[in-house]
Each structure stands twice: as structure tokens, then as C-alpha cells.
Length: 132
Image 1 (cartoon, rainbow, N blue to C red):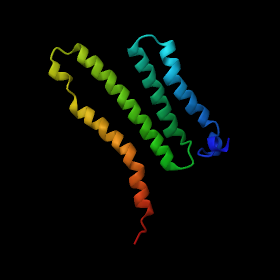
Image 2 (image 1 turned 120 degrees about the vertical axis):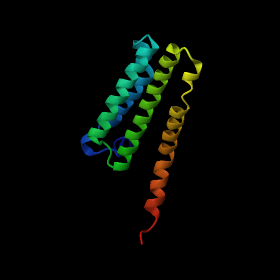
Image 3 (image 1 turned 90 degrees about the horizontal axis):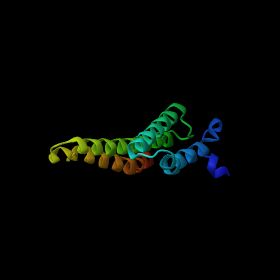
Image 4 (image 1 turned 30 degrees about the vertical axis):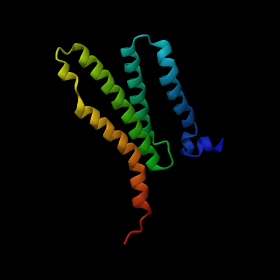
């Protein structure tokens, strides 16, 4: 049980339950309760935005790097869902097929994913080096 609450501040002992509820809602409850795909994405965007605000505002983790990483991951998920919804709607209403080629946005999403993966590694390398 200690492994579940150790990463969190004392006043946020329940945060693992919030995290599990978020995952359950995104993976199971939204598809069951909301019928249309556009509404499912809208509901998922709302939940991700709400959780992002909660992580940034509350800072539930004892380590500030974990708070930053969690916020960055939530932002990446939000942007991915938003881009998917935007491109689906845009390509459905566009008369020109060339308009649907959004390489800049796709590459920015790839860059965000790489930053999520490399950010903690770079921070660890610079922290391990002695100053001076």
C-alpha cells in the first residue's frame, strides 16, 4: 500500500484513486455512456483538461519533476485528441484534399512525444554532472 501513496504529498494520499478514476472514465465509461464519437472525444478532452488543471493547481506529487511530467503528459494527450478531432472535422468539410495534409501539426506532436521521452533523461544527465 505504501507504493501507492508514497509518490504523493500527505494531503494528497487519495491521488492514486483519482488517477485510476480518470483512466477508468477515459477507457470504459465514456464509450459506454456517450454514443457518438465526436461527443466521446469532447468528453475526453474535458476530463483531460480538468485533470491537467488539477495537477497544475494542486501539485500532488512530492517531487516537482513528477508534477511537471504529469502535467506535460496530460497536455500531450489533450493536444493529440484535439488534433485528431480537428483533422477529422476539417477533412470532412474540406473540398480540397491537399488541405488535409497537416504535416506541421503532426511533426509538432512528434516533437512533443520526443520531449516527454527525452526530457527526464536530459534532466537526469545534467543533474548528475558536478558543477564547477
